[in-house]
Length: 168
Image (tube, rainbow, N blue to C red; front, top):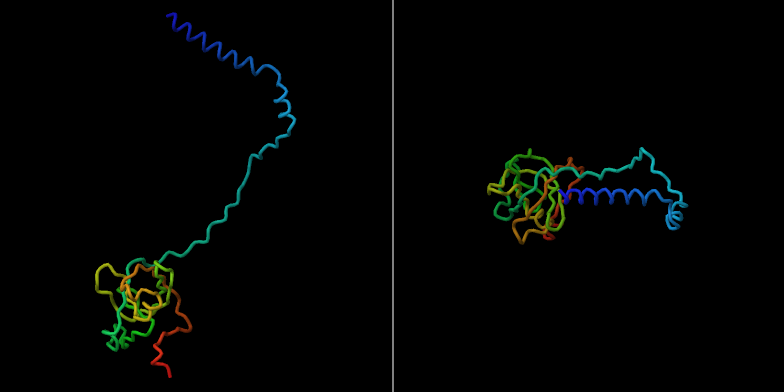
């Protein structure tokens, strides 16, 4: 019982001493602080946040491979002969004639190819690009590369990479 009374008195004296200290006038250092006018913050403060420009979501992200000389001249799903020096590709589901920007996620190089064939037939791959597209993306030596696919509107002109021997 004595312990409870002592505890209660200690709490009472602590609270009373805090109140007594606040009842006195400000000391010299506090009065200097009060001399500085503090501007109140307005109740309604609005901060304008500009949204980051959103990049369009990719059509697909996955592994790409390339195909070349063995298929050169053979008919594609579109009926045209495969030319390993054209910027073309094979895709499982995109409509034939669709233009796709293929971006190598390892080095950020990209190229626009036209889908003219069906494939790839190997599970886990999302696109097979032509030999020239693989050269432009700089993954010909590796054979496989992680890429991002973005569908693009049909361009008016298309560049074609040809070996020097084919030039007139």
